[in-house]
Image (cartoon, rainbow, N blue to C red; front, side, top):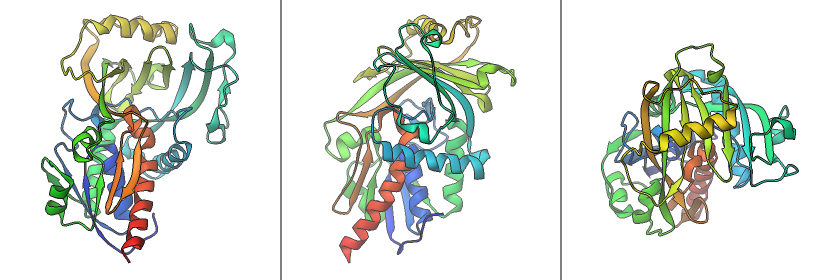
Amino acid sequence: MASRDAPLWIGVVGAGVVGLTSALCLVEAGHHVTVVADHMPGDFTSEWASPWAGALLAPHLEGDKDLQRDSLRHWHTLLAKHPESGVREVEITEFDDDQSEESPIWFTSIYPQLRRLPPAELAPGATLGFTYRGLVVDPNVFLPWIFTTLQHKGVSFIRRHVSSLEELKQITRADILVNASGLGARVLAADEKVHPVRGQTMFISCRDEDSTHHKQAVIYHGSHYTYAIPRKPSGGIILGGVSQASNTNTAVDFSLRPDMLRRVNEVTGNSFDWVDLDKDVVRDIVGFRPGRTGGPRVERVGKVVHAYGVGGLGYLFAFGVAAKVTELVRATTKAML
């Protein structure tokens, strides 16, 4: 439980994973929180990324290490205290072809059992590989769980489109605003660095609960973006993917299916050669990651705390960003005194 601050009224715009985790940290710090958003947990539209994310909590070799470290600490706590939240352990194998075999892996202190893979165990083309026991989140479980948890803690939700931060202030009558609007920050923060990154994946049915596919995740970084991520609670596996900057096509591109499956089989040693694209694909998923040139923006400007631009790493960074948001709110409070 976070330490309690002098209570303020906080207005959060955005009910994606960053907005929701920020609301949780803020309400646990003693604040009154109202979340305003176009889309809420339970909605399934490609216009927001959180329901469609792979949500593999694989630490990124690059990016803000402190935010990742803080976030992973919270996810591990959530697993221990609330296993019903959709977080679970899984064996993770990562490959990379734009790192060297000597590249430092900063998160060995978090996962001391991490093992570097010898060349004979690398996927084709990979120059670095390692395996460890990490975490994965099922958004179909987590989003309803945190939504209900927030409601029980007194957080208010308003479904409404917000055209400006001034409008958010008028709606919530808040002392401080938190801008967790994702792609919406291009308008709300007038940030031209924000851009959509189109993703497309396939959800493959796998009802055998003892299948090894539910026990391990594989991801390949570098010249291509390929992964197999288990969704045991949902009865299947996510296979992908693509990363298409500034592509806003919401329609499924069925021509991508064979290439995605080919790449998945290449990096998993043909573990999915049983997949029939005409029979086993339950759903084709299209979503838009909230990208930002230069990386995430987590900073305070006056009485507004901005928290957006995490791209496809929203779940990985979420609780770290949320903790930082709470710190910035505390700093804003001191500045107001």
